[in-house]
Length: 217
Image (cartoon, rainbow, N blue to C red):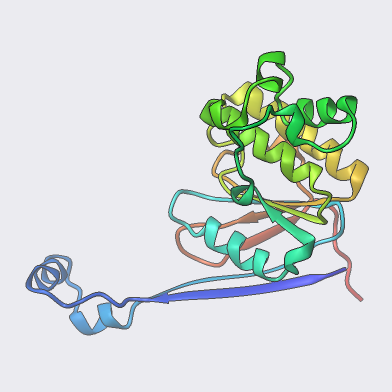
């Protein structure tokens, strides 16, 4: 069972201006204490093939930081990030996916792009939500061991988000592809059914919850 430990720190590197000093005095904060301020993001997580890891927490807590650091732990040839997927303007959505038509349609449907007008449109001309779903379909078609997605389903209506979360769960279990996702919405947890839930709060240690009980000798 692979174990990944990540740690990222951001020391305060701002310039002490007159306005900064005034704000420090207003909040009873010394300039020295401000200069010593360091924000740290740490996490140790066990991940198996076919697992779904969902990093959640409030905005600004550091979910994206943990996602990026975990991504660095995986060899580049074994992973894909949705942000890397291009949006062609010179061919249709279905033509972007290699293989037979039915296989392409199944992948697009899994990603919530079952509408025929989306299938026959160019990815560059899709709506923002449809573009995100196209990137998801292309990531699944890439046959990588790990798929990384930040802001998972955040820009979608909640019914569509629930459907995609459920489809992703089935896809991961069927193919053994590991999904490492980050998002602030918790309404998809029941459908996504993550194997590992990483809760990142604004302060305090990161909490890692496993769906299956881990018994260590």
